[in-house]
Image (cartoon, rainbow, N blue to C red; front, side):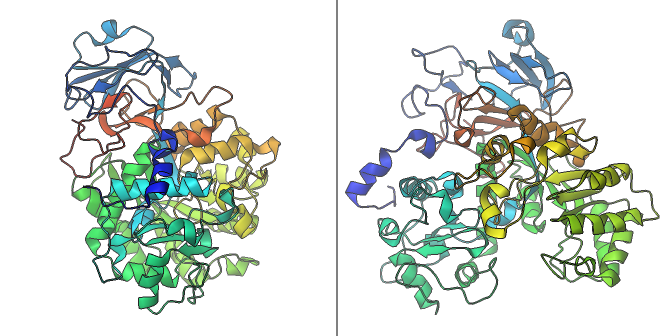
Amino acid sequence: MLTFKIKRSYRSRWLGLPLALLVGGIVGCGGSDSVDQSDLIGVDTVGDIVPVQFAASCNGASGIVLFNGNIHTMDPDGSVVSTVRIQDNIITHATNEDEEAVGRDADCKINLAGSTVIPGLIDNHVHITGRGEKPGHMAFNMDSARSWDDAVAVIGKKIVENNVPLPDVGTVGTQDNFITVIGAITAGQFAEGSLPDVATLNQFEHPVYLEAAIGSASVTNDAGKAYFESKGITVNADGSVVNTTGNPFFSNALGALGADQTEQDRINGAIDVLGWAASVGITTAQNMDPPDIAKQVFDAGNAIMRIRAQLHNARLPLSPEEFRDIIAANLAEPKDDLFSFYTVGEFIESPPFFFPTTADQVFTDATFLPKLSFAADLMATVHQHAFSPLEISTYLDAYEAQTSDITRVRWQLAHVNNMTTDSMDRLDALGGGAVPAFYSYTSANLVGQAFAPYKTLYEHDIHVGMGSDGGNVGVINPWLGIYHLTTGIDDTGAVIVDESERLTVAQSIELFTIGNAWFSFDEDKLGSIETGKLADLVVLTGAVFDTGIDLRDVKSALTLIDGKIVYSDNSIVACSNANSFGEWFPRSGTEVCG
């Protein structure tokens, strides 16, 4: 029995909203409840509908062939092929030969029915596990909502997906009863010009709490108000929750909800966000959050995506010697293609000023410079937040002052707003690379920062990738980012990126794939669909290289990592253990699409 409760009239509205918003996939010829299970892959069609196929023979298959596709390999020639064969976890063929020639002896054949396929997307700067660790049941799809009705659909879907319990009778409940969205949304993304109002959220009996990016707005419903007031937190008549912490990244509401969390709650939230990320095609994350929770998730076998973790927790006030010892210990950890420690960053240490105006405010010489030298001596890769030209230039001065040869370890600067070609030349001469972000889609109107020179970076000789910086300040969904990079439009509908700095779809995807693979030394394993590489592929719900498609609506229909299905919307491959929306991802290391 579902615990989702909503007034009957509004529930009808929710159920009538477009399935693309609720599920994010192409509708097949029926969910797993309406068809008989079979080991037959890719033979039946119903009219013009994409065939629903079955995963039974794909689990543990020694040979998988995906055929009849529009497969953009992102190889150096920009090849587009129709057929890919995977043996174990390795791509053995990327070709235009037919499936019989390539896969006569394959255990599993998947008819893509003309769908567009790209390599798994890599986010080179994202706070992904931190987003999942936030309290409540986070409705990650809220970043795509464009109206209050959309928001209601997203909340209702989350209640059903996670089987969220109502508070016990006579109590105000706990964080486990909440639907939350904390960060990565703005009031301006909604057609109504504000976060959903109390009356809209009161259609849910569950407590709901929405907090916009950088604490710019918040709202809760009556059930949430009862909880917060029991914690001594003031809720205004309009549902906004008063924050007296003085910290826009850590509100009173977030603190109260977080105090209710257990370690297992945070682990479950991390698994939840990794599954959602697979649904939008992310297969590798350069995770900027402290590595503890991510390490626990992967140690338990829940490898939903590849994680490249930070070598240290920059939030800890470490002495230079403590920093050195932690970096050295984590560098000695065994390397794994699914989880590995990767860089020093996003900060070597917390900066004295987040928006410095003079060079002496960028970092504290007495602690930062010794730590940077230790990183260089240990041959550790550094990935440093650099928001402005002042920060870029000051960090480059420190990079260039190193006596150890850092040209082999790919030191990086992230965000790089208004980066000059002179700074690009300097970083390139050090063997490094630049990682702009698309957070301006969400928060340009909040922090007043200009965007990075995307096209200038792309056309420069320097190595360039792309990050979302998503989690709180910005969205994680790469398709919102690619929409922004190609149109210049932010979440309010304003054009903020000059046409001269916009990218094409192909250029944007290149940065998210083979471009980003270079930064973690993965370019020989990931980032393109080529013989000998690891089998990370995404079958998309839209023909993204065609004109006229709204990239904001694109998601994954099928995501494979290491040749294994980690997400399906049931339109290409059906999973009998999918949820009521037809979606599936593994919540444990032993669960498979079946």
